[in-house]
Structures are given as structure tokens and as C-alpha cells.
Image (cartoon, rainbow, N blue to C red; front, top):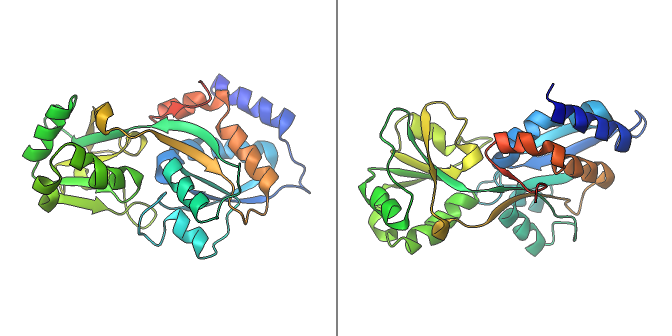
Length: 262
């Protein structure tokens, strides 16, 4: 086991260990961008605390019935949500989140992929990305925050929104949908955009890089407590665990920048 995980276990045993009598089933709603980190670290948290993580997946925003704000608005219960900051902003606006419970976990960036083995176009500058989009036969983006930003702001800033509107595709994400990279891997889109951790570990695609800073919105994955959280102490313990400095190596491996390292 990596030394960082051993330190995490020691930290949890010392500071967060729960007796069997106080162990809770923690209902977690989580979007795709931070899911690989949560999946890797969740078992260590469960083993050390006695808590059990009961997981529901959904996008941070969007018109899907599986979107986390939509789930909470219709009365689904959760003890903690892990999603991008735009989604938590929506929860705050709709009075669905506990005030002051937001905890930053990691920073993320929008990237692009092509099908494995295909030439990697230049997207290093605004002009290069503009030319790549105009030349692409088909473009896919997610139905969550990154895709919402590109389709409503990013493509307009690039001056190509009208020109590419007929060849773009919005992809519904997990749990009932799939990652944008899977669509590109099958050859159903020539290029695809999504948060980097949702691109880099998908087979059948090659990662091209991140989009330029002028069309790169600041994106944080954060945790927060819904107003209907039944186990707030256990939920906060989970967020402290996932945001600890010792979780940084797992976060970095997932293609995110650890917030705890700042």
C-alpha cells in the first residue's frame, strides 16, 4: 500500500474512528469528475471508520433527471454531495445546501481528446483551437458544467458558435449515459471536450491537452452538505478525509490539482 494511504489510515484511526454503534450509512451523491478519487479512497475511509458509503451518481448540472440538483429538488436524500462548484452554487440558490458547508477538494480543467491513433490537432492557442473546431467534422461535449460553459460561452468567445452548431453533440453522462471520451473512442465524434479526469483514463482515445486559459473557466470540485443531511458529522469526516494533504497523490493521478496542497 502506498505510504500516503498508510498515513491516511493512521489519521483516520486516530481522529475519525467510529464505533460500530455510531457507524452510519452515508448517502453520497457524486458527479463523474471526482468519482475516480472517491472510488479509490472510499474503501480506506469505510474500513477505518466503520461508516458505509452509499453512492448515487449524477451530473453536477444539466437537464438530466439524474442531475444532483434535480435529485435533491425532488426530495431524494443525501448526506453529502461531491460535485463541481457551479452545481453547489445552484444548490445554494435553491436553498438545498447547508450554508457554510462547502469544502474545496480539487481544481479541474477542460481538456480535449481524439480517437486513439488519430493526429492530435493544435489547441494551444485561441487561434489554433478555433481552426481545430472549424476543421473538425464532429464535436462532442458533456451535458454537465464543462459542456454547458463551452456551448453557451466558450464557443462564442472563440467566434465559432454559429459555424459549428450543426456538428456538435451533447452527451448525457453517467449513470445512465457515458463519458464524452467513449463517444470519441467509437468514432461517433472526431473531437471531444470534458473535464480532464473524465478523459484521460478512457480506453480508445488520446488526450490532446487542455484548452487555452481564455476559454478555461475556473473549476473546483467541492463537497457540501444538503439541508436534509442525516449524518452531518460523518459527512464532514468524509470531506476532511478526501481533502487531506495525504490524498493529494490520488487526486493528482486522477488528473486533478489537489486543493489541499495550496
